[in-house]
Length: 236
Image (cartoon, rainbow, N blue to C red):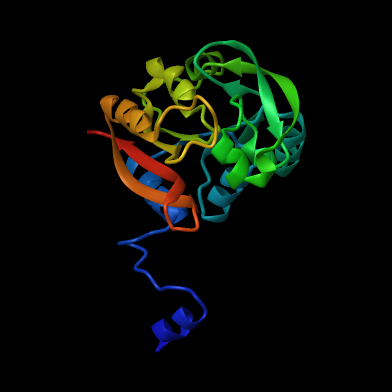
């Protein structure tokens, strides 16, 4: 009766242990892998970190957001959380700086130019201005901040609008500490020159990570996938 009731309103009852949503799945991984540090790369206004806190994760979080307006918001959100650190910084494959294309919807800002499909599918991907931002490799950041001690259990979340492989490339000396990761994969590229999702998956798998869950983000009208979150853990 309850099942019919929720279906009437367009919802579905699922077994959370067999088919968990993204955040319950992440919390199970954090427990299983004993995660004590989350790197929130492409943090935007802090949505990911706030959701982790709401669901009970109390460990250390470092969020990275290079765009000035978004950083000001996430800084405000984190002000009363002593275990949540925010950095006005982008992560990439080398240290330096780069021009960020800031979009009408701040979460769509990217180092890459929107593809024709991206402009047609996502109206707010349109660029409003460019902002030169500081870029660091993850390896450099962890070393400089003393976060690369042996025994750390790091979860790397990447949502960088087509730049995830650059972030991963800059973390090669830290992979021994990274027990799991989340990467946003585009089945249909919404930015120019972004790698195909098959290349991203192959790169992560070659580094020893296995898929634990795939979570759709955007679909086309015909139900084909545009983007999904891919969660992976390191092989034993």
